[in-house]
Image (cartoon, rainbow, N blue to C red; front, side, top):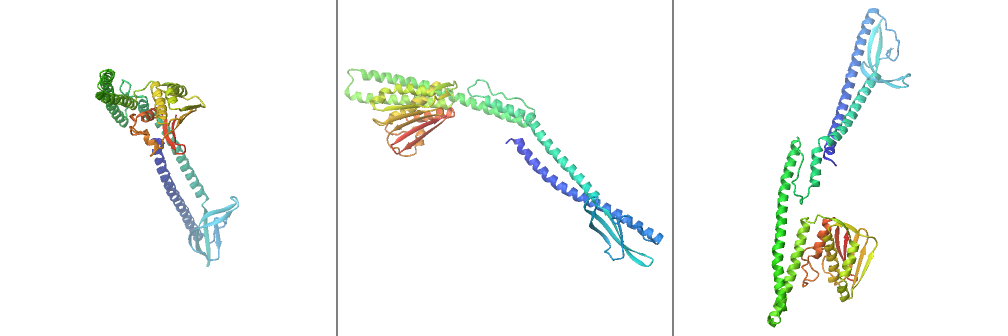
Length: 415
């Protein structure tokens, strides 16, 4: 819900309450004033009749029984309300009446003056109609004002949002926000500009550090591997030194794989892979299974590939290759000799199921960094973490489940 709409709701609620209270007070006030006016007219007519009776010594003629009645029966003196049937209105009509007594030729008579209040009801109806019309116009005006303000007053805010959505940390240009005469929006733009400058500076520093670290550490590792390979190829290498050299060589290989994995993770988290294009993951899976065929044959694993529909995803080709490679290598590496490997693909999902050792603990924890099925494995434990980061980078979701019946491990990627 928009901020202006929420604000207007409170305004409308307050206006409605005030309108209801004001209308009720106005109704009571006008009704009281009109009744007082009718009472004054009755009192004036009362005084006129008494004066006339004193002058003529006779009762006034009764031309309209609804306005004047004369009776010999006593009646309470004073003002009161009553209802009288009106043939023209075909309903009971409210009247205000004033009763008093006079003495004519030694006889006591009770006279009752009446005045219809139907005009008062009509006036009140007109007043209420006007009030409700004004209320409707007020509500309509607020709705139109809300639309106009959302287009004009909030236009700088929407332009700022559009600029933020278009902004990328990788772009060389600084964030450009439109100038606005509204102080609050101007302060917001200044704060956002300063924030993006700090974030961009931190991002570039981190990117530069990652690139430098990757370059500066990769070269010594390559030299160490080359030197150790030469040592292992020496024909006169003492037997006592051969075993430590082989251990050092395997350690440098593990360190090199760890270095590559961490560098890739850092680049993914820093969103340095920006060139995305449509990639057919089903075709990529076929290629990777072909590359792993020798290893699968050695383990006596017969893969089963089922493609219900082509799976096309827009991502960087290198990351697509890394995603499929890590998932398949995990399924092959942790499989059993003579085990099973099933790959199912449709237009939205990639699912890889493999048999393996029973799993202790929560399967999703293995998606974290440096988590392994086997703690003694040479793997750095970053393959599934890299796959998860790639999925998250492109809006996908990687889940890991384990079924103890048959010891089936399932990795499912949904896009």
